[in-house]
Image (cartoon, rainbow, N blue to C red):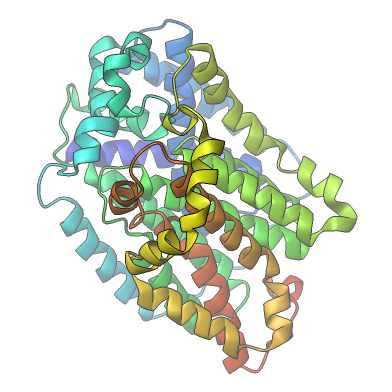
Length: 439
């Protein structure tokens, strides 16, 4: 446990100057939440860079590289600039204690035993342990056709973070790795708490944070779901805020978070595409400007995509003819969609979201069209995969569909909850810019 806790603290410390370089007004929950996420993403880049440079992973080599990054960003954060004013402090509420208790309960669940998920044993944990023994990314392992079951094309942010814990531990142990998922959920909750406080009262902000924390808890402990929910959820919420205010700090936060989400799972890359489409569709008059602000996300996604192509790591969806499979299954679309509806996890949540959308005033719905569009596009991407999969549709649905909608639940829940809260307060038309102090 000690090594994992030290790793979490180290990542948060590493991320502080990075978060301040992105937006120097970040304080309190916003600073802590973004710092851990940036630390986690940066550690992935450090280990990836060391492996590309053929520098063996050791605690000393990783520490030296981390110190160089930390000092570089500390110097950037100290440079004079125009956004150094302090943000308003977040007012605590008694409901925050309920959220804290909920997090502690999830931490207990995530650490009841060594990680137990089959996908951890066969994909994420297997890669991490193999890389640890090799002292870097083992490209021979990833290129071997015998290891295709490990989804060798998947991005490596989560396995490399597990390797960082192992380096601190002095050897491999998955007994307490579940705490990394807990840290991701906490980071997302802190970001949501800070953003909600800029738009509503402390009571509603705390209540919304409790909801976000609960939705951020991935039941698939040890997989990349928790990291993807955190990075993707934070990224979408920052882009939402940026579209309201055109705030450069939120644009930078959102783009970087989405870039790291693309390095968690392939669904993160799909989310980046969905956000880009949503940004263009909802800000058509300034689409070229807004899309350019997403460039850091694509820059972060590019290295793994290039490496994946260079090492010819196959993607199962590309096997054979995906178009032929799509055309063959389209006549059975009603059956596939009915089966997806039957297997939908947490149907009550999506019913509640739909009811919430229908009962709020139309002006509030128009303000949240970006989030509605992104959610709809991402769902279409998810469903399209089942029409093109080379595997049996029922098997593929049973083994993955329960996880996918949870990846996009936080942003839509955040938006609908805020609409309902502001409607109850009678401030449904209050402009976002007047409520934000943008931490």
